Amino acid sequence: MRYEAPTTSKAAAELLAAEKGKAYVLAGGTDLLVRMKSGMLEPDLLVDIKQIAKMREISKTASGFRIGAAVPGVEIGEHKALGKAWPGVVEAAQLIGSDQVQGRCTIVGNLCNASPAADTVPALIAAGAKAAIVGPKGRRTLAVEKVVTGPGQTALAKAEIIEYISLPKRAPKSGDAYLRFIPRTEMDIAVVGAGVNLTLARGIIKSARVSLGAVAPTALLVADAAKAIIGSKLDDEALDKLAAACSAACKPINDKRGTIEYRTRVAGVLARRAALIAFERAGGKR
Amino acid sequence: MSGAHVSTTINGDAVEFACPQDESLLDALRNRVGLTGVKEGCGTGDCGACSITLDGRLVCSCLVLGVEANGKQIGTVEGLADGDQLHPLQEKFIEHAALQCGICTPGFLVAAKVLLERNPDPSETEIRYALAGNLCRCTGYDKIVRAVQAAGKEMRKQNKKKAKKKKKK
Image (cartoon, rainbow over all chains, first blue to last red; front, side):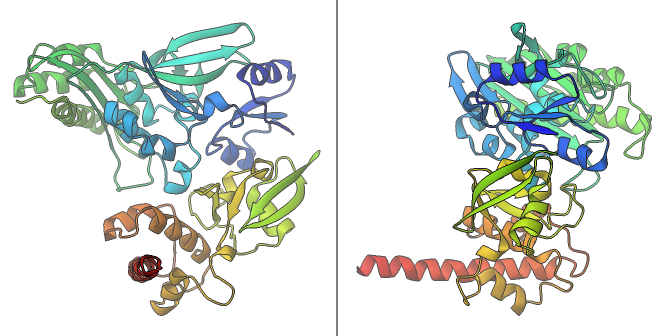
């Protein structure tokens, strides 16, 4: 196995493009190195992206925030301005693993690992986040909900790398929240996850995005759930409609973490609670 | 397998080693540098026995490649004591009998040190969350939590004394 640590995104894409064998991007390594150890993966080339300065930073731009692909969870948690603008995205990122894992894990790794239960993905989808992709044929941008195409599958072509995730500029009176259900308090994988992001105008929900995780092969953007609360003050009727729309969108599996019936029910409950938190964060009064 | 030359700083000392490019930092620290305080439990980032700091960040050394340590600052349990003077965490772990077999202890000590540097007066809940990535199969955690609380208290006392001395100067 060859290990390379290029200092530019372009060089990283070129290294990946030139490799004839199996090539992987290494950021936090909290999934990749586990798979290598178990023998599931035998890379010919690892391209470590942590020496690429642009990928190591969180920056505030005129159009919002950029979170570099190699920024570890702990740094996302420490960024005050990001936490103020996007508390739901930050809390989702902070839910991943232990403090040890937070020292390494990245949100782009969480996304590209393409687990249906990834915690940051519903929060990013609700936020309207976009992935900035660099590859041998140039750059492109893809909405986060379009990146994962199935369990373990992404829309990235060979040698394409996500350079950073961009979050839109925050409108006033906005709030987001992410909740996941696990049977313990820490160190577990979501049975269901729910992200809600909304903006108010004169106390009424003007726009909203609702996303669910672990209830389908990929995280879902549930337009009907957003419709259920837009135009409301998040009264009980709107919340009931939101929960019903979320449960209706679920296409879960039965596994050791939860049954189809259980996940379907909990999706509605969690979305309701996340919406209440997001509403309160936006300064809404019911 | 091609090898890599790694220059790093471990517990304040410059250290160089060579290792295969796919070798974990855990294996390199134990077998090439001789720092056997770093323990292997699960090898997959679940148990925290191999906890170290990498440029001040708490990580599992089993989930880091040796080559990634090039140019980095590493902290291990061997760097806690100051000569013969044990770190307050080490003293309180002994006092509170916060260990039995001892395999998890170095990881707990390193993780607890990072916690107390960030938050000198953590609540019991904060301690339990911060140490959720460290597994112990002997003590049942209560003694470990008490030892971290006692060490935090001791360190706050020492820091106050130091601050007073500085003021007098």
